[in-house]
Image (cartoon, rainbow, N blue to C red; front, side, top):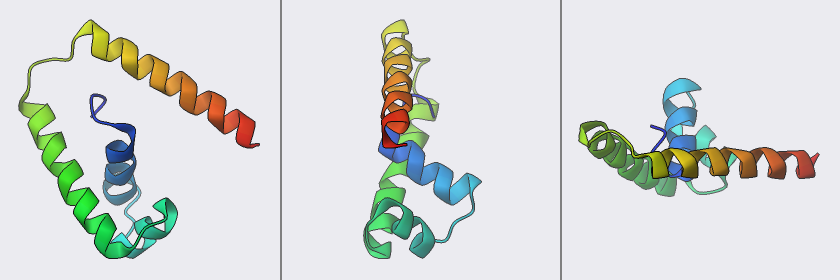
Length: 79
């Protein structure tokens, strides 16, 4: 899951972990429920592909750390 783009992770978490319906998740991310369903389908496909791929490289791990720092910094600015 960590190797997926942030947008994919968000959709998968909203749907799978938070248990939101497509309409609720669409409201959170700011799109129509139909668009959300298409994006979620694609995210699930990428998750399946990532799960069957080889382990992430150190470069991918470093990119995830940077992405996390950016999200934290942006979140602090929004407050």
